[in-house]
Structures are given as C-alpha cells and as structure tokens.
Image 1 (cartoon, rainbow, N blue to C red):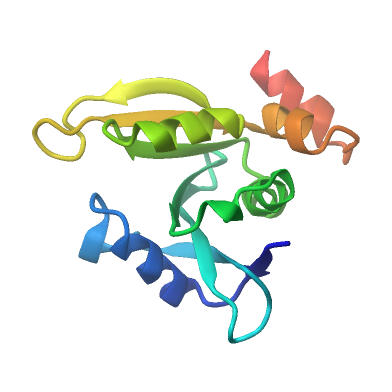
Image 2 (cartoon, rainbow, N blue to C red; image 1 turned 90 degrees about the vertical axis):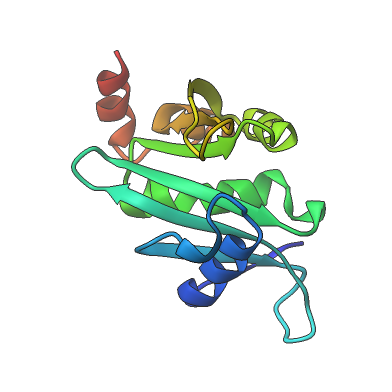
Length: 162
C-alpha cells in the first residue's frame, strides 16, 4: 500500500518539476505537494508526487500536476486521497490538469482517473507543443471516489453544475 508524504512541499515540488520538461527550473510558484512512497521509512522509495498549484479561491479551482517514476503509485485509494486535499480541504469545485499533447499516455491516465478532456490550448508550451486541459468537478469526484459521502456540500455543489 502506498504511503503519502506531507509537509515537504518545496522538496517534493522540485522533484516533480525536474521530471516535467514543461515546468523545469521555473517551478510551480506557490504550491503544496504530496508524495507517494512505497512505505513510511527512510529506505522506502518515492514513486510519485502530486503538486497543487494555481489555486484560485474565488473561482474554487486548483491545477494539479503529477510526476511519477513508478506506475505502482496508481490505485483508487491513493487517487481518492490525493484528490481529497483540493476537494475536501480547499473545498474547490474543480480540479484541472494541463498536459503537453505529446503525453498521450498521461492524458489517457487522467481520463481513466475520472478527468474529462475539456480542450486544447494551441502552442501553450511553445511553438508546436499544445496543452490538453482535463478537469474533474466535485460531483464527479464524489460519485467516483466517495459514493457514500454527504457533508451538506452535495446539494449546493450540484446546484452550481445545473
């Protein structure tokens, strides 16, 4: 079972940025990050990092970016826990990803995780490299990852969709 690492935002975000050519040394700016490790000891290996950035409290949105070096990080429980941070703590209505169009495998993974492909931003990462935007709304997250959840947000959030 994966172990989540909190409280090391700068270190984890730098690890993720280094593995993402469209982020690189510029980094993510103000962000939070959660690591996914093989266990909870110093000898365990970091498998992935989820970075939460471009948070907009007024619009109830946050962008997330993922970097991984081991596909074993992906499980429904781990994804549920990683997405609970923006949806349950930030109380956002929407989480979105922005991925270079050449990263077809990542885009397919996003869709399998429940994200909806929303559009393409032409030449967003420089000439010839387009960005694919995928998003997930609170009701979609709740339905897929928390089917029995009800904290009073359900009715309010569902009204916002319709």
